[in-house]
Length: 180
Image 1 (cartoon, rainbow, N blue to C red):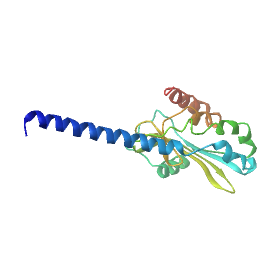
Image 2 (cartoon, rainbow, N blue to C red; image 1 turned 90 degrees about the horizontal axis):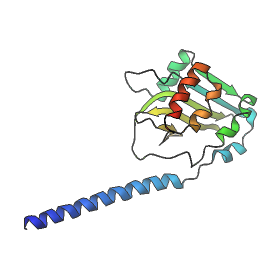
Image 3 (cartoon, one colour; image 1 turned 30 degrees about the horizontal axis):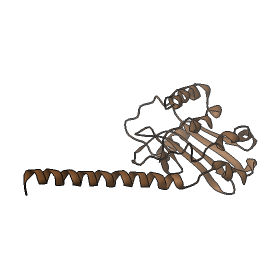
């Protein structure tokens, strides 16, 4: 086989390989995007008095020496009194912000990252358990929502900032607006 045929064969194989990767990426992304998620529908069936929001937080400016898991983070923040629980009617005024979480803000990423949690919150129902589970930051500055890594969106901060201490809310407000 001549050198020219080897180069052409190599380029064709490269183009084929790149095409397969791009098709695979698009297929994965489309699969997640086709799963309808409308949090407003989920909340319609819930009694506001049965809901509770638990927030574990720290400053986004704290630099850790190693990535931290959700379990370790929540235990550590509870020990440091950095846990807030909001229940029932205290959530009612802000429930419409939660209802804005849908496929339009849940943009999945196709690469996997390691969690390095700085903020974690859970919206739970007494009857149905965990409804929304949000861990803020992966090493790529994405957010994990109900176990799926998605791109950061300010809505995920808007739902909790009103409940946080003013100084910490201001710090997270700066971080949330960086992605816009």
